[in-house]
Image 1 (cartoon, helix red, strand yellow):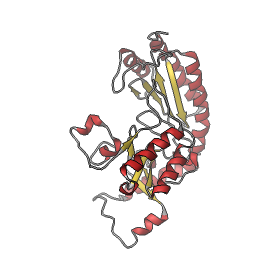
Image 2 (spheres, helix red, strand yellow; image 1 turned 120 degrees about the horizontal axis):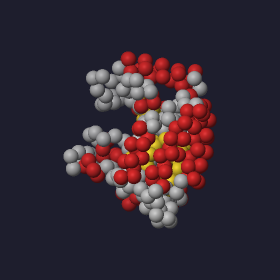
Image 3 (cartoon, helix red, strand yellow; image 1 turned 45 degrees about the horizontal axis):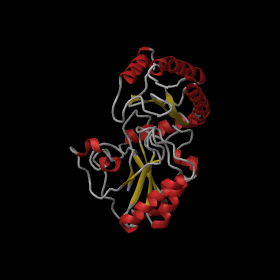
Image 4 (cartoon, helix red, strand yellow; image 1 turned 90 degrees about the vertical axis):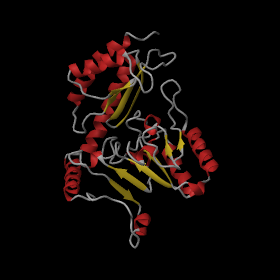
Length: 305
């Protein structure tokens, strides 16, 4: 079981978990993966409460038959598909449902892990312990490719006398592991997790100011230094500035303005991301948001009411 909007990769079996229909024709993936909806349904429809979303997940589990579900994998905070911070109670509720039906809970922290949200792992914000946790990217700060899976003791014990038929010829490469150890040491010695927490609070305030000032800003979300701004053509109808899986003249112009003024970030669909380096300081944040502030004059002109 997986969630729509969560991103778990785009190759082989991973695309089945990601649930991206744009690639299914070329990559049919593996059978047996059931998707449930995320609490967020886009800028126009907004959020379900934790209770509503959890009830839908439990209904799906019952309809599928809990005994047929091996695991529920989800990005703790959805990254590429919108920086979706789950409502309070949601993550705890997923943990309870998995315990209730004997389903493994897998937290995908590839994007949200290693300080990005102001905690070592995003799941820590909700004091939830998953059964498995997958990580990459921040594990080596991308200096070398390395991914890893952490697991609870009782699961690890299973493989004490049983073979895990996985891995590749470059598995556990010593250079990749050395890079990970060095990176983790820098996180600790330079207090980067704490810095992400402090700068994240400042970034949240700066985002709120943008939303107050610019009519094209329909939503701002962030947790630590993991953030996004969603743009709309109307605050009344909340029509997005560009369609889902598409773009528009205004979004293209905004992206061009950012690049020309030295701000490099992802501009995607009706959104742009605010995910600065964990070592950023307050002055640098202010400089970046000054560029954003000026750029939003472009999209403000497209607002109809």
